[in-house]
Image (cartoon, rainbow, N blue to C red):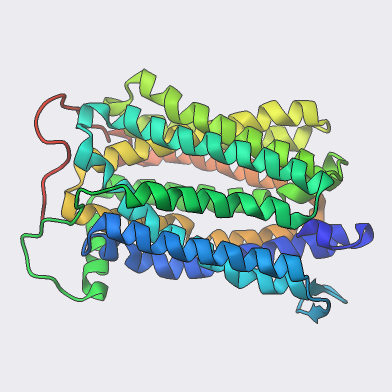
Length: 404
């Protein structure tokens, strides 16, 4: 999106275009996430994953068609004097929103299926291996896409997500075992069942504190990272798309490392303490990005930045899967996602405005410093989260018991 503008317009217009891109996906995602868990807890989860992935296939094909046709024109929008979006950029937003919405429906169905086939003693390793594999595929795809953007038209890079969605569909079609939820109470409206997830989250105070922590961290991370392309182009002074791809790929490689590495530390009895400590590291990494001016220092820093959320994700997923009843699990995952990302749209737009006011470095310093401060406050005040943990079991049921 940044490179859709001439060089003299990228800092102002490019920053806001990235913010609008985030808004076009984040708002529909939050609305969908409210119901996604209830839907996952009502239907066969394998069938649900297959259905929404087909929509992702169609949406990615639509984006590719828009880029290939590249309709000319400018659409004026509110903002700085003269702000506009190229027409082809604006038309890509709905397709991107569709992809993120279907991904939102996919996630709780997928995450609640893992403890069906994996005992609690292996949840950390299983989650780490699954998400590390996904991260490595994503990193490789991003790097290849960046290279393709450097030497070929954009349409060739857009073939990659289509192929990945197609491969996912083939894998999902091979699933034969049903993943329907065993219910012990009669079904109620989707609205009522969705609200039960929020009620459960509120009653489990330690889970509520996780969601609150994620809400704050994701807001400030969105303030900074919505401008990552601008960070590469203006702060690091690198205009070739391959360097942006290298940054994203390196962060993703860090995530893959974090997914696998954290399982080696047997975090289960101290899950809450681990998440609090890692939160502060995220902020420190953003501050470090603001202090380096060369890609060769930025790459190791962004690797650490990616690694820490990977660790947190493995801890969080494993803890929920081990301690929440199966019939409630989808709704808890969805309720946490809504709570965690509720301020992301505001953070993305705020990131554009703050960057215009104080520049890229100032934005990263403010966002990183705020996360570090919050981590310190959470360590002092989130008592329930500090005591969160569980004991894994090598034998017995693969997942938590069903509940109505």
